[in-house]
Length: 276
Image (cartoon, rainbow, N blue to C red; front, side, top):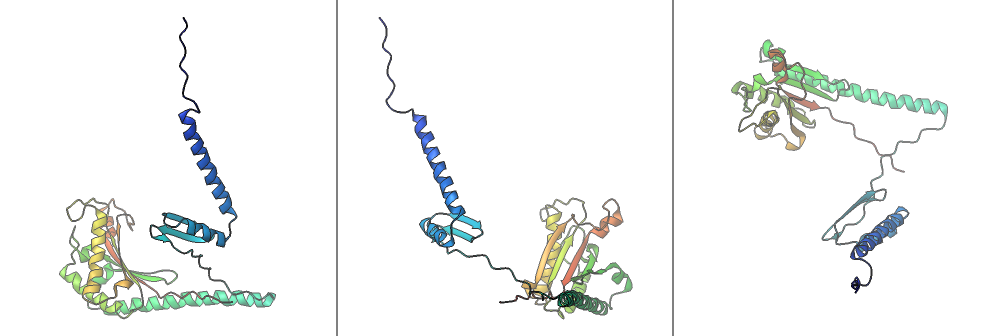
């Protein structure tokens, strides 16, 4: 006698239900994308309010929108970029305009170069008490555009090997430099610490990153704690071994790479925004 086969449960297989849900969600997602591709700002605001309370981040041509659990923040359109002044249509006036613009840029560069050259001469005057050998070790560079002047101090002049505390004789030198920089209260100052590529692994300095950063911070802290510099105009930056100025294959080259640089930036021209 033939055995009767058991009938399966009525309806679709279980996997088909999950598949149908997934396809439906994908369809809704792409419909939403399509609708947003041609939406205006008012409709976008309505959508934002409807999604309030969810954690969402959008960024695009209409601006940036962010929401947290407290609700949706208002939409902010990106600021309009500064516009250039319209050039006169006449050919002669156009040439005069170009010449005047180029001349203004050149004048600004020459003015900054003059400021930086004056700073270098003042530095030499302030450092006069130090002998010529010390002054010969300090490197001075002015950028080609007059954007900054860089004073370079060999780390051996300021710190013991593997340490970040200023030497007693270095403190006098840094104080002299601070007195000079106090004459330029509107100029930004950045202190960069550099090392050679010899690894260091101590509790205080697991790598050259920590050592170079700590040395830069020691100089900056002296400016702030002792000389009252505004912290907002100061930067302390550790460069580790990755910006060498000499080879790391010789003793002399590694000594040149171990250095602290003090960069004093020229005052920048403010961007002029022309209104309608």
